[in-house]
Amino acid sequence: MTADYELVVECCLLAGRLMMESGAETYRAEDTMDRMAVSQELTESQSFVTPTGIIFSGNKNLPTRLVRIKARTTDLGKIALVNNVSRKLTFGDITIEEAYSELKQIDKGHETFPLWIKVAAAAIASGAFLLLYGGRLMDVSTALLAGGIGYAIADRLEVRTRVKFFAEFLAAMFVTIIAILSVSSGLGIEIDKIIIGSVMPLVPGLLITNAVRDLMAGHFVSGLSKGAEAFLTAFAIGAGVALIISL
Amino acid sequence: MIYITQGILSFIAAMAFGVVFNAPKKSLFYCGIGGMTGWIVYMCVNQLNQDQVGASFAGAFTVAFVSHIMSKKFKMPMIIFSVAGIIPLVPGGTAYNAMRHVVEKDYATALEFGSQALLISGAIAMGLVFAEIITQLWVKAFLRLKTKP
Image 1 (cartoon, one colour):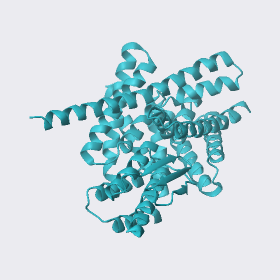
Image 2 (cartoon, rainbow over the protein chains, first blue to last red; image 1 turned 180 degrees about the vertical axis):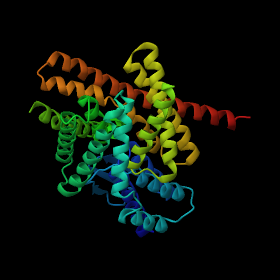
Image 3 (cartoon, each protein chain N blue to C red; image 1 turned 120 degrees about the horizontal axis):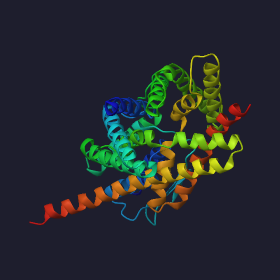
Image 4 (cartoon, chains in turn red, brown; image 1 turned 90 degrees about the horizontal axis):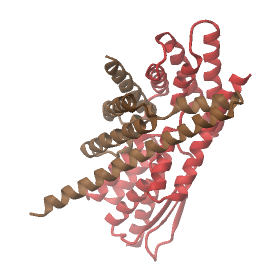
């Protein structure tokens, strides 16, 4: 039976890692891991989840395991898939082996929107935000262009350089350059509104709300570190915009 | 009239953000609905008392409440519906103004905008948490009523 329990621990760790990598709340990852463990008769399991690593202990006989979380993105589809597997396992619809292979499958890759659709969505969101914040209809075309290019730059550079702050900084810089160029050439009117609308797809909204949500749930370590990440990202965007404006 | 256009725009914005965050395809429409209700409540409260902080709280509360109902209905985590709905409420404009005044070395105004942005984001988080706790209490009370004859 010991081999079986080791698989349970492995499965819980994989589920926790997948959830934290795709931007789930810390308390939800802990909750999912504990539920999965309890459903497989590991009733005394303990999990400690932070945004950069997970410590999980099955019971007093099993070795305590640790996994590192290297990259964090926002992927709501992955959270839903992992949640679905854990729900099926808890209700006893699938065995632990099946759950593990399904999680492995999710880890290998799952269906995502292609990049051009995401860029188009970011562009449309920028245009909609410009109008929501009281911008003029004439500025929409610039916001569409700037928002799409900004998001594409941030996304590609993050994959390349693995430094999120640098990617966001450069993306904000390009957004501001496009806005300034369009206003000086007479295509756009209100430079402030264009920049605010186009920068919105880069804003770390999920991180900010998750940080406070974790702090309120009593997860002070993860709350503070997520808050620091959110602050740094926001600062990088602000610095990118400010640098170009002050030139 | 303005409510209709703003409603449609916020629906589009929230749905587009659902795509950017890679939400499951069948949840996209409901992401948009959540964002729309939140934004309309925000607008109404903002027009009533001209207070962005209170309005953000009300908007976030509505978004969280609606997404809680949807998460129960579709058996998906609540975060999928709430994230896209929260984004329009994020004080991007206020934070931008703060940054802009820092660059212009007008620190007094920058501080004013900065603290307002901080208060608004705090209000959004409070709205989310309050809605979650209230729905949890409500579900618990409902279950107790059901089990007791």
